[in-house]
Length: 283
Picture (cartoon, rainbow, N blue to C red):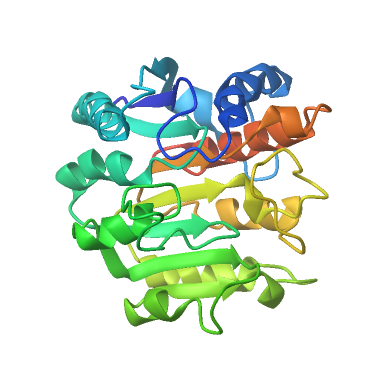
């Protein structure tokens, strides 16, 4: 079966975006992607020879109504997934909740590989339950995740409590702190994650702030002592052969990095996700 890879984004600040600068992220990632080529010599992947790949443009969100924005995103992705496409999304911030819904409708509750500095499982902010720090809490509430197949990698930062990961672990998530990744290869970790995920569908969600701001300063919520680009590649390449049914990369904010390096890094990570999709030929 011929598959179409959809690359889309939310136009404007987007639902839950904590910095309006994030709206420039997808455009700048597209610009930096011209530096990429079609073959991955490191993994032998030939994505453009294996899949039909297309950029489907932006989802036109409602900047004045968060709930309506989520509805628009969900409706757009329902069409993409119904057509047999595997979406790779460029987002100003994580729209993981509405994006997951059509994926789940097609594939059932999915596993999740979540690479981020933050867990994104807070319950609410200022009385609002739908915001950028809570998408995966809402996914749990809606039964969208296979919680025993959730791995969160790169988590770090200060907190208002001594046990900020209690909720995640109580749900069965595997939480891998950034400090447990320092100065080591993540290939052994990914071997364990692969076993955890098995052959069932998984969704990859990658927040650029998982990386140390020395490498990716162009984000609205930087946290020190993060992952390296090499570790990011090990994580994504470790997904090759898994049943990946969708991916996103979020929170690139170009005005915080005028060099463009953050967007260039994001473009490369998205290419690696493309190379890791099912039915991509390797040589």
